[in-house]
Length: 464
Ligand SMILES: [Zn+2]
Picture (cartoon, rainbow, N blue to C red):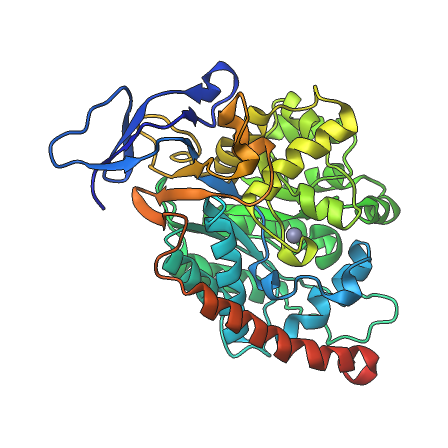
C-alpha cells in the first residue's frame, strides 16, 4: 500500500445525495484513507493513478448475493419459472452437488464479476449448511474473498424448518436446530467478524427467510442473539405475494408488521427484496432505519415485480443495491444492477421516479449504511479509499453530453480501469492481475458438466 494521487478524472460521483453528488478534481490517498480532494499536484515520489477520460465513484457495495449460484446460471428447468418453482428447480435441486471445489469456483466467478464491475464490498447470503458437507462454506467464502482483497460480509443463512414444495423430488433441504444454528453463527463471528469501522470482514445472522425457514417462536431469540453478538440481522422478505399471503394466513399480519412484533426491525437489519410492501410497511421500515437490499434484476427475471424502492427512499429510508444470486439473474454485475434500477423505476413510474445520481447513492452510501460500514460509501476526505475508476472508452459512451453518468445510464459491459479497497489496488487496467480467466472458464465448465448431469437424472425421480 502506497500513497497515491488519482489525477485528471473527467468527474467524480461522490455517492452523496443532492448537490454534493458531483465533485471535480484529483483525489489524494494516504494509506487506506482519502486525504484530500481538489486541484492537486503530485508530491515528490507520489504514485499517480491516471484517471483522464474516466469517472471516479466510491467502490460499489453489493448488499445481497448468493455466490454459490454462479455455477447455476441459465439452468434450463428454471428459466421460465417464478420464485417458488425456480427455488425448487435450481438452488434447492443442486445444493448438495456444490462441494468445496465447486463452491470455490462459483465464488471466484461471482467475485470476479463483481470486482470487474466496480464492486469493492460484497455481502454474501449463504444458506446451505449441512452435515453432508465435509467443509465449512463460511471459511471457503471468506478465503475466496480475501484473495480478491474485497470487503466481505458473510450473512450466515440457514433454516430450522424445511420448506415443502408440491412434487418434491430433490434432496431434503438442510435444517438445523436453533441452538446449533446460533452456535455456528457464534463460531463464525469468533473466527471472522471484525466490528471495527474499517473492517474487511464481517458476519451477519441471516436465516434464509423468517417467513418460511423459521418457527415464529424463534424470531425473538434470533434477533436477541444477533444483537448480543454485535452482528446485524439479514434475510429475504416480501420477495413476492407468497410471503404476504403466508403471513396474512398464518399470523393475520403483513410481513413487516409481523416482524415488527418480534424485534426484527431496526438500523441493524437489512432485508433483500421488499417488493410487496404497502405504504404503512414502508413507513415502518423508514422510521426504524431498516434497510432494503434492492435486487431489480432478480425481481424482474423471476417476475416478482418492482420494489417500491423510490418510495422508501422518499420517506428517508435506507436503500441499497444488490445483484442477488446469479441463478436468478444469469449475470450478477453491479453495472447491470445500476442500469436495471435506473430503467425499471422510470418504466413503472415515469422519469421523475429516480435519477442516476440517486441510483449511485443507493449503490454506495446506501449500501454502506445498510451493512453498517460508516467509513465507506462516499468520496470524502477521511473515508476509506474504496474507489472505482470507470473508463468511457467504449462506443456506447461516445457522443454523450453529460459523460459522467455513463456508467449508470448506459448499461452494458463495465469498463473498470482500476479499483481500490482501503487504498489497495484490486482491479488493474481492467483486470484482476492474479486471476487466470481462461482457467476459471475451464473450471466453470468442468463444474457445470459434473453437477448438471446427475441432476437431470435426479429430477426424473432417483434423488428423493
Ligand atoms: Zn437472495
